[in-house]
Image (cartoon, rainbow, N blue to C red; front, side, top):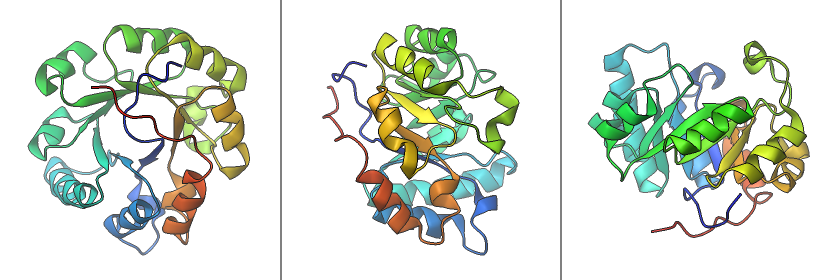
Amino acid sequence: MSPARSVGFNLYLITDRHQTGSRHLLDVVEDALKGGVRGVQLREKDLASRELYELAYDMRKLTARYGARLFINDRVDIALAVEADGVHLGQNSMPMHRARKLLGRKRLIGLSCHNQISAIMAQENGADFITFGPVYYTPSKANYGKPVGLELLETVAHLIAIPVFALGGIKKENIQAVTAAGAAGIALVSAIIASRDPQTAAAALTTMLPTIPSRAT
């Protein structure tokens, strides 16, 4: 991976309000922000458009207070409406070129990738970064097949110039392995969202990650 590229964060928090117990998602995310998270993907696929907009609006205000970047999963319209920093697309989402035309060059586009070809195509089609995995087994990603493993992560991370965020089964015990393989950072859900102490969990993970390089202008 080229150090010339950066999206300004190395810990990419993906939300799931169903894992927060009795706490409101915004409170959990704020704790994570206090712990050092600077990239948040709002991924609440089961919400109706109006509910998602209202949550995204509040999330945008929250992340802005901490200087963190907010990405909306799949919904370019919601991202534009709340002035989010970008969107995160899947392999079956709106085509990259259409999303880019709507978002412009100033907003960022992340893409979920699960194999080498999709990672290469993501860069060629203009993605700013990708998540790649599942690196390790995790029940939530079982439908994507067996884990890609560290070897393929390393291949992809050194093959493309955009940041690669390792996803799937990421925890404190394997962060050093994925960053040594070339990942620019990690993407995760439950290690923070489901934690009893999201701030401490985020802080512990952040200290184990590489220094964030300055964003290219």
